[in-house]
Image (cartoon, rainbow, N blue to C red; front, side, top):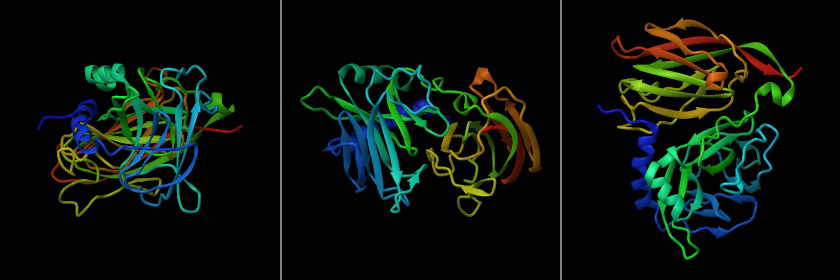
Length: 333
């Protein structure tokens, strides 16, 4: 089966979203503030906003604000977002007013684009122009898989670039990789590294990698069926992170097993923060019949990103794997 990388998925879905959503994204004029979510609504703040296809579980409201270049202290002041101004803050909230940091639903963040930006998109896709998502807790910018929505208006807007919102945070559309524009954790709060342990337990069928940066973790899957998605497993099984049951979402390509998809899962944002220092993470395999290894230690060259590979390819069926990762986190002095 032919594998598909995330950029290819984004380009293929461009056609689907252009057809299915064209003509439906007509925003009501809005100001910064809190809005109750309604399915099918579009809330526009100037040249950007959100479109709600369905409401996330446990979410009832959203706070939206155009924040310009006034980013919180977690973000590097070297970041120049003048290309698309302003950046947009999005905070999903439950009925009690509490923030919901991670969501799983069809809520799109969008930016209106003119003809030049549209042409740039069709020429090179996300390699040239894309939406970036920033998590305030980690100071980390991540690529948000971006799609084109075909719409036009008399003011020169010919379409929108949109992405499925992973959760609360900051969004900006730009022509460059923003992932390097972050402050190291010890530069934010004057903290020093302390040891911690992250316990990971997952139901593995083929070969997959866990990718960790800061407080964020996600799967990248290669061979056979994705973690927790084995077709004979009796339903989707979570990945346990220090006893917290995380059920990641997947592109579901070619189907819900994501077999040989070469694709990424959604991210989880609340693990103990991997310190922004060069370090050697220690791996202890508690349970697992196949191969488990660290393929990348975090250092300055890879923006302090840790990668662990779990490989069950040579064995029949699927089984539970459990590992302990001992690494240093940043804590306040």
